[in-house]
Length: 268
Image (cartoon, rainbow, N blue to C red; front, side, top):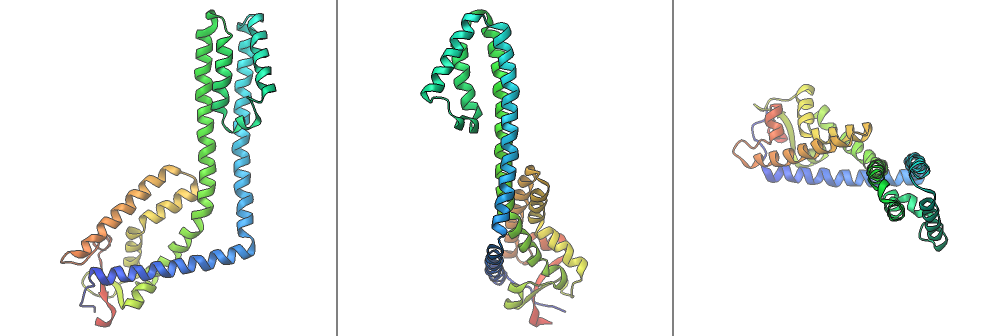
């Protein structure tokens, strides 16, 4: 039976020791992975993701190009088409339009739209504006999806492995009720009345304490980026709830929710 609850300073010290241990573990694992070529494989995977997203951009630009070609063929008079074609050829020859514009389809569209609009008769400009609005929205959506795919691929590779390592490390509390930091500072997790805990008690505490980490893992594994918002909210809630240790009961919010408390091990 434990009798003395642990205060804020000792718990903060245990957390700091755990953080140092986790950083050392991450550095060791990442060093091993760099020697085994994991980074190179990860780079190929990210490159494939970027290729898929780029293909989507090029495909959507092609769809809009067909719509614009039909518009110019059916709704513009021959003199306007000749003027537009001549203007575009001059821009291509002068280098104003370059392949790099494919990386920013919206900028390319604005430049082309201005050229077409300036050489269009007044009678077709309302139709031109309507088509331009649709095209701009299509390209905006494609650009956003491509950007999201690039960011997600990079973040997943950078964060997923460290997050999993941290999750496995903290899972020691699930089995034993203590982590390396708690062991070194002489404290442990027990039930609210001081009696030794069990795996069910430890499990509930791990779920409440590391809920933000679990949601983050789910976001990285499923690609649902909106899960990052509740993950951050849960992290802030856990951090604020930890300040309850300063109170007379010396129990953080996750301790209250799981029915646990932190006691000195030597008070057994």
